[in-house]
View 1 (cartoon, rainbow, N blue to C red):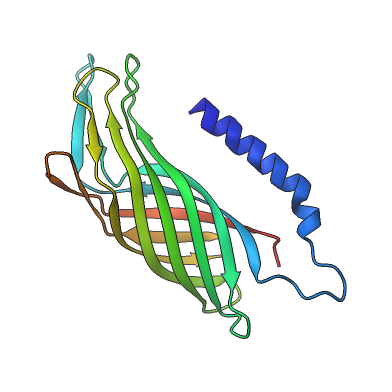
View 2 (cartoon, one colour):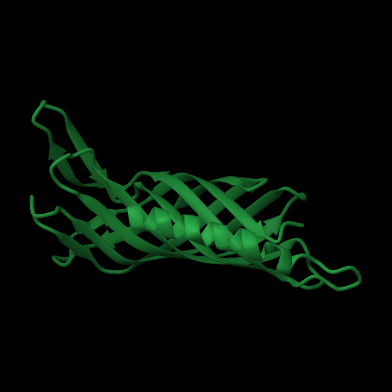
Length: 195
């Protein structure tokens, strides 16, 4: 987690240095391509594990739950400025409050959406979310699970970079057991350069 945080900070610092090179020059037409950074906080899905603590408390791990960060691009359709294509690849992570073990569910989400700008700040999107490298790791406390890659539809309504998302998806483990990974969440996105 520290490595991910440090990498993200370095990446954002690097972007802040090169942003000026993306700025529009007077008299030049701007590029339809823009750099995209996004993140989300999501909840939902089936419980795949329950962790019991020595104080009597317990915590469930759900398949749709997690925090994610991603990078990618946005393409504005020439001649149809209200239509956008967005694509990102990222990392989604959820852990437990256990002190003696690093129990976690990780996956690599790839999201491709078609978007319509209903107003200059209101964006409606729909597309495909693909989760790859889905792993539940118990850090030796229990059995680890590896899931097959999963695909499902995703929907978003966003205003000024903050949105609500819904993704419908099913995970299947190595024993062919199915788990709902449906998730609803709060998303954040930033495009560079900002227009």
